[in-house]
Length: 114
Length: 113
Image (cartoon, rainbow over all chains, first blue to last red):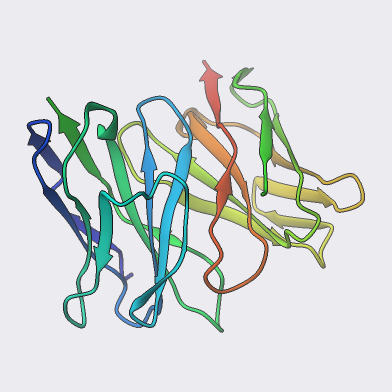
């Protein structure tokens, strides 16, 4: 069964550094999402992406965040200048519109900002 | 915007007994309600979902009910087993396509031997 994949599984970075989290959505999916989960808390929506542009973003997704689909398979989340409070698990998800609404989640990238 | 409340935050049940987790939502335009199971350190996995044109859905030991009028939905797990121990999240979404999923805070379910 196809799955969403993410790399790296764990990223450690210094405060103020840029990080790029990578995702490969399921191949025939058209909608892509990033969520984050601070340790022990609920999963929070960051951004949705369709047709090469952002569809919706939350208040968490400020100017330090950006998303990109650089090619036909990858979907990336960039944090320009990381803060301590960015430490969290970041999940990518994808869905196939028109057939099912189910969003399938990747295994996550644990980001630790020191 | 949508707000999803989930209760209880922690639930312990004896193996073989039933577990019930309850959620409420605020946006009457929500029409899709998935439930995710998350084991420690792993991704959320969809276990069952229900759409607003249906009042109940069942899949083996798992069932979900929806009361649109009251904006309540619940997850029922019968004949619980040790592998049911996990965190369960309810969620709501307004429409199909690209709308975000709003999650509840989660219920940590412990199955006691």
